[in-house]
Image (tube, rainbow, N blue to C red):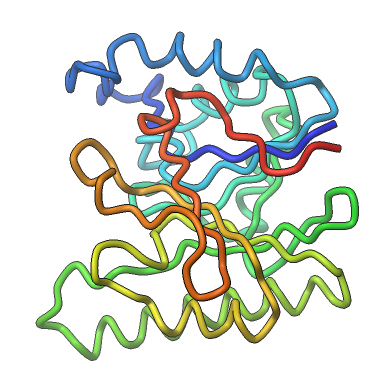
Length: 231
């Protein structure tokens, strides 16, 4: 058994937005995802760090989730900025159950456990429009609150791992609200996606301020889930 993470699969079986149009590493990316997941066994767990499906509704995203469900291992998903299909947890669980999808869990104000380690996280936030200070402040506070709820659900777990879509650090940007919550709960490692192409060079990787950061965007890691813990 092992725990893995990858983000930004950007699947589009139910809508016409294939990432192959960008060429380069994205060429034939669906086959690359299949090959990347082939290293997982049925008891392994993979956290999907957002931007999973381009579908804007359950109906459009269903083919993508059927594809994910058929990949080896159990999956835990969190929200990305392009996951327009995302809805309430109860509706998403009902959607999965209705369609016989049994190996995908939802990380949202909760946590999961793997070999004694707590899997926590939330979408996170980066201020895309720096002019709208109040809007950004509200969203950041909401995401910090969701992260706090997730980490609190971990109880007295000795190891708390955080997974995000948005990077808590990149270039000169430091999301203090998010990082302060991680520090409060003693988090030592986090994994995130969102950054693509030339933005890979902006990523914070390795230790910074007592926390280890790893970028797991699919095109950065060659579409292969990255091992977090070996069981």
